[in-house]
Amino acid sequence: MSTATATRARIAVIGLGNVLFGDDGFGPFVLALLHSRWEFSTDVTLVDVGTPGLDLVTYLQGREAVILVDAVGATGRPGELRRYRNEELTRMPAKPRVSPHDPAVQETLLIAQFAGDGPRHVLLIGTIPLSLEQGAGLSAPIHDAASTAAAMVVDELATLGAAPALRPEPVDVDPWWMRAPATPSSHAAR
Image (cartoon, rainbow, N blue to C red):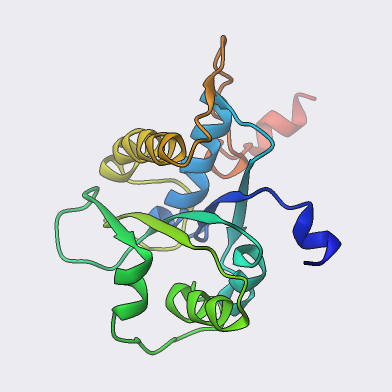
């Protein structure tokens, strides 16, 4: 095992998605909620990877467990949450990748397994998006689903023996992409 692999947290919670395309920012927003409400041991790392494509494999390697959070293409109503385990993800028929930024979850899991250092435990927590149109911010049903998804992550971490502790005082959730843009007149007042 390399030194880099030996020092990695054994569990990664990975937020996937482009925050500039509406509900695709679900994964990063759930990570912001997690950071704001819980404190995590050194066994757990939370990582917003954006849209890594096949580079996602570097975040999977050397981990015992990975929890992925993302918007998913599934049938159902917007905001409905889905759970997919490793076995389900690797058995799904491969879909064509339309851009190098597609999350490539299935492919990266297979690459990490083939290399012999992929996670044994994988869970994808996803929500069905309402809109993936350009623009920052989540639709109401996806925003509402984020708290439940964060609780699902916490429950999964507890089953892995790495339950986080509630912060005595929650931190405000204030990701940069959810802030109202400054108006020209607000700049003039400074």
